[in-house]
Amino acid sequence: MGSGKSYVGARLALLLGLPFIDLDERIESAAGKSISAIFANEGEGMFREYERQALRACEKMEAAVIATGGGTPCFHEGMDWMNAHGITVFLDPTLSILLARLEHGREHRPLLQTQEAFRENITRRLDARRPIYEKAQLQLRVTDPKADVARYLYEYLSPGE
Image (cartoon, rainbow, N blue to C red; front, side):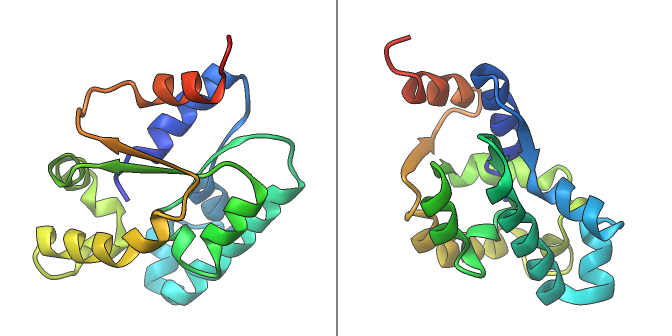
């Protein structure tokens, strides 16, 4: 949540010449409603089921860069499934970068709207998810909010070019 997955993913896909898939957009399209509406009307459990289905549908595709939601790796053995079907990357920005990104657009993030203090909520959620995120095949600590993470990943994934 807020690590830059969609931005970096879209840019990386362009650099690699691959399709880009934003899993949240796929979920909204399949459900015919926004993620916020799914959470409000059907609950997090149903959202996680839509998410599982959308992720598993990617198995039928050719190579692509896929940006998942922050919870995708943490439910329905998502990280294990992704590791078995592709290359996984954990974008790990510093807490200050993460908080700055999440403060903007907070109204579009159902899990951040009605929770306790913002910083504590983010810290608690990240601490709970970190052991799963750390199962990713690549882990990239982002300390500069202006770093060209997509370019770095492109160069790492395309050796010898």
